[in-house]
Amino acid sequence: MGGRDKGQIRIVEAFLSVLIIFSAFTISANLTVTQNRTKNDNLASVGLQALIMLDSDGSLAKYIGDENWNGLRDVLNLILPTGVCFNMTVYDEQMQQINADIISNGGFGGQQIAFVEYVCASRGVTFHCYIIHLLLAVVA
Amino acid sequence: MPTISIDTFFACSLMVLLVLSAMAASSLLLSPHINGVSNENISERYAEISKYLLLNIGEPQDWGQNSQTIPEIFGLAKAGSENPYELDIDKVSRLNSENLYALSYATIFSALKMPDVSFRIELKPIFEVAINLTATYPSANEITYQFEISTGKQGIPVQVELKSYVIARSYFEAKNAFVSSGDTYINVTLSNAVEGHVLLIVIARSVSNTKIVSFGTYVFAHNSGEPNPNVPFLRFSPLNYTLNASCIYPEITLLDAYALAFNYYSTLTQTANSNQSVEYGIPHFVDSGPTLMVITGLNSASFFAEWVAYPQIPLEIGADFADSNSLSNVFAYRYVVTVNSALYECRVWLGGS
Image 1 (cartoon, each protein chain N blue to C red):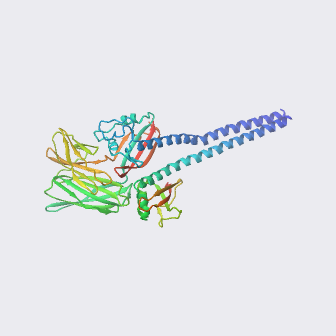
Image 2: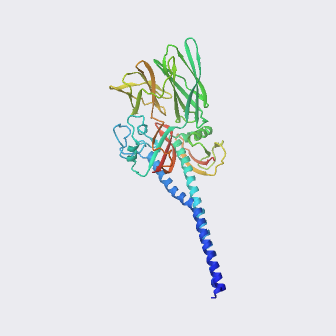
Image 3: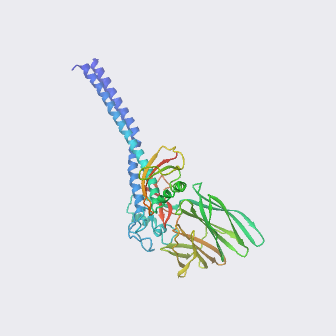
């Protein structure tokens, strides 16, 4: 191998090092994704806890059974933190949407959006199972 | 100089330059994310600790009910409860510093058994009730006071049912409940035969869910001098459905005692009486939410009416995180909790020293 070739190989090595550096950038991008996931987990946890509290005495299924969508919207507005937007959809066992009205407190302008799926059952004589999809967003 | 040396020098310089700039760029780009991962781990740990505080019963399980018991392990959950985030009415009341049997921060800190964790707990109703005296209409034999009652959550009106009580010397009135969309007025008419300070209590219950309850109080003068709300005459300590009222001054004479809830009210019965304190039994009303106890009395000749809520909420206990220079990595967690079948907002702050 000639001396000129050795010099060229070192230039190739330099470009290989650039490749390694770009790999480092790729790792940093993955770290960013992990952090966003954590923030969404916190928001989802707030939404899940709100649904658990409403379901603890059966009132969540009662709102749905009575088709009291305005009441459900108002109570979610009260127990969720100020500055959190929500949009709820209620399905039956066959995943047919039940709520005729929109259960929401406004538009979704936030960057963080979390999704909560919750299953609740009625406590009446006739058994009903409802699947609730709750979308949450933090208003900037 | 041979060509190979120039090539090698150029390649080495390029490599050193690239590596140095890459290290600098990587350091700049990754540093916030590495810190973020570290904070994420701390946040997850603190989130679990905050849940532990609210979901754990503590040891002994009934440390709230017995005024002399100091918990070995701290936890606020109600023993035997089937629902998560249901807190014990007495454990919560013992966090209020106004209660004679309140736990100190140091006691809770020891019982938590986490020496590297500072905390602060706040409990309050989900919405606020504000009462303002807006107008007074005197006539020959009576005076009518007009109050503005506002119910809201951080400025957003909340539709509620309102129930109000008026208590003065030898006078008790329970007004009929009515619905308010968030801002309304009520009138209180008092005869000139009534004298002294008057206590107005308003209990508000959300129309959308009767478990969401709040209250407000207002003391005003009627044919007497202005009241000084910062000078209490009694110290209230409700615990285990018993109200202990300690007299702060020796000349105090107690007159009437009432227990008030949204749908029910009753007079309180004395169960014990000592030199400087009186005990009353607190009735178990079926209403969700707080029971408000009012005791009226005389300090020398001046009339007073003072109150306490059971559970003793709102309350706050713990470290003061306002001075953020002394602490790093402070995280706040918000929960909706149940106490005596009513919903409250609980905020837990956790940080390391």
